[in-house]
Image (cartoon, rainbow, N blue to C red; front, side, top):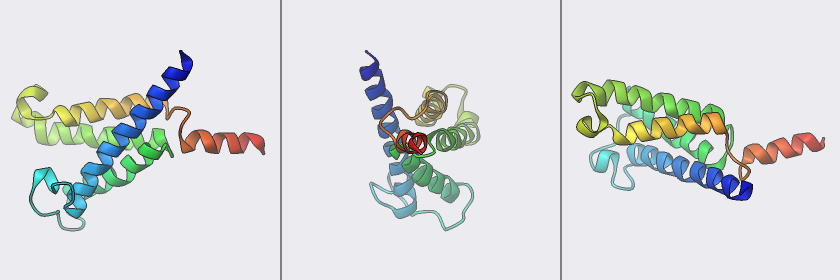
Length: 134
């Protein structure tokens, strides 16, 4: 049962990190349908869109490979909490009404990874094993 748990945690981390990094790549580079399904990428340095996309791409990539997972996941979770409360929540209280389901799901998914860690199939685990052998 522990092996299944380990596999699920690691696969969950990879999928969530990959999806988040894809959002960043779409916004920054106009790939995968571009920002929010269309439109032009934000100008470099534009607050908050460009910065959020950089965090999505870089921190999402770190979560995906499992490197500095807890710190990267905390940054991702905070980014999505900020997005939810500044973009979605003013449109209505509930995510189903305000279109904030993805932000809420990403926020809580990354917070879960902060608490449970990266799982055994990660660079964090590999680095930890190398350090113990020294």
